[in-house]
Length: 542
Image (cartoon, rainbow, N blue to C red; front, top):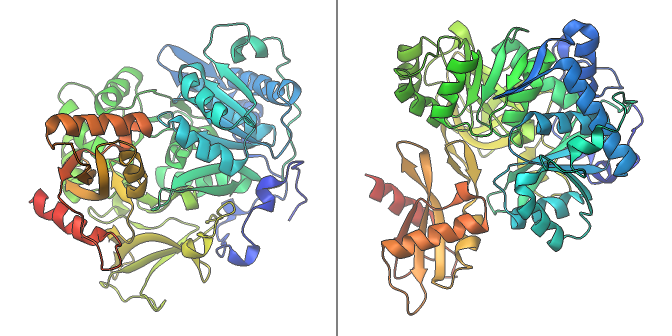
């Protein structure tokens, strides 16, 4: 292991001890990297040097940056970080904004400078940003000016977040104006392959976020395993999709995968099904990344939009129903690539492509990974018997200063929290989540976090939140509420509580259904019986 290039060793110092890491495997040649490696350099500088300088790199409606132009901007942002904002290798840098070329260039600049990128979803409110900033001890941020309100409210809560620069201001102190004065070359940081490159935050079932540490080699590993072997991108491809760059699903599919092969990416600030269909037709998108609910909704757009440019469509974030796969194939001729990934693993580790796809199955382990199904005694389940999904590969879970490391990593395996069945041919079939995480339209939502938001409203005396079956979104957030004295149930109060949650935490987490109860089911010791609420939600969905 090469010596670290990090001056600020906060992240490395707060990694779990190596004995608590999962077993790492490097079983295919592409995954054997040199000791010194900078993923930003590999994705951008190396592509420019390799002859891609004039090819399109980052796109948005009305914008096209070539690889050379992207490198120039990334280098200037890196200089802004290091020369004017005081960033040193190892510092964490908050990146906050919708999917735009500026956000992508900022991510590349942070990695080239040897800092640690912490990209967050644009919908997060100040209270959620505060948890991220405190957990990662962040002092620097590059943000979209349209989200300045929540960022500044976060800074009021955490004064240590003292150095913030905004893009999109149109003013002399905005990032665009400041970097125009800086040189467009940059002495890239000679990071070690095992230096942290990013912190990816994911909600725990308790609502307390977990920070997943991924190294520079991990960023390339997701490109050289799943992308290379399953997506099989080409330099002529145009990638697009809906996941934010704050999701590792989006970071891979909309930035790292295309840049690894000299392709281009179309970054959309809003990636709903209609917007995706319009973009595919207008720009000729060839590789699409989104959730099953979006593919299902896009079936209604097939008659209005030409989707003929598509050649690869990747589905992840939630289970892909067989009827959706079959309907999309019938409508477009495209065989959807299903996959399961995890923030802890950085990207997809079980999937299949082309003729290897079996509708209804997630797939088989991606080359470089191994997977199995384990029972409660840690014995391997025979084919057809459900159990806990366990996986190993070139990437794995390393939580930043978090006791939950021992829950996710057990005996060298990453235990994902999913129940699966494996068949005789080694294909894996999803059965259910093993924990209380609500997966709705590809978003992971922790029930206790929604409960905490509801309880800040004076009308709510008690509440319990669970996932409920939903034909369109797979599952929705459903709240069972006991009202405080003086409040009457009704549709107006339902709307008021929903708007209250949207204003308190990220809007996508709000309860789409609210049921008022006289009391919540509890054990003799007063513990909320969530399973009873889940049973009630299932009964009401019938």
